Amino acid sequence: MAAPQARWSALLEMLTRDGRLEVEAAAEELRVSAATIRRDLDELARQQMVTRTHGGAALNAIAYDLPLRYKAARNAPEKERIAQAAAGLVKAGAVVGLNGGTTTTEVARALATRADLSSGGGTETAVTVVTNALNIANELVVRRHVKLVVTGGVARPASYELIGPLATELLAEIALDLVFIGVDAIDVAHGATAHHEGEASINRALARRAQRVIAVADSSKLDRRAFARICPVEDIDVLVTDKAAPDELTQSFVAAGVEVIRA
Image (cartoon, rainbow, N blue to C red):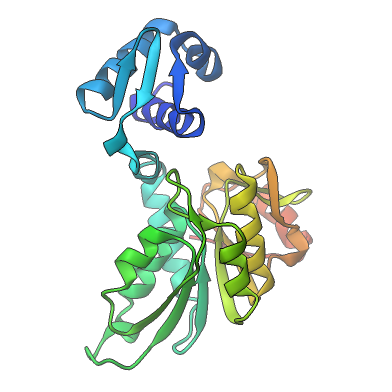
């Protein structure tokens, strides 16, 4: 992990997960030297993202959204192309589900600014969006042509996602035409997966309520698995990824019955 920004993102995610970290443990997990971690933490502290402690750091209270912000910088051009291709699959009048994540956030932006949906400036609903992501809701609430439905639930600071029974209860009462699922990993054997079991649960509920399930994932997420399963590959109708995805890998998804779009 050579890029400083990638290390900073990883360190912030570890802090969000654990509340604090020790230099030696972080160095071992990221496979870099302790001196590198100390320099990274000093820089994050200078930017008021973390508070340095003896032998490590604690998360600064004002840095609650930084893990998501730094994730957004990873593979940004690929995610934008994926989002444009994914948003193009939505027909006017559709009811669309979106879970949290940087790629689905880009999908929401692409959908909100699609000329054929947003033109006219009227109050008529062009698309209905159901989401459990607070940041997506914050961006879409000002779009007059978007009817916005937000689930209840408990917010996760690392991803802005609402999770838990309050979120899933609402989803049991609605139907979606299609859902865009952002994932931490996806492969043919294990399907779509997430690092956090609570996020996986609400994402699974979204997928179950949709006629079509569309996974959006850049090529770095393919042929990988994470802790908790969202849904098996058989439940995924379309995978939208980038052109760097190897042919043999995308063909394995096609063989499993998944339409693959490389943007």
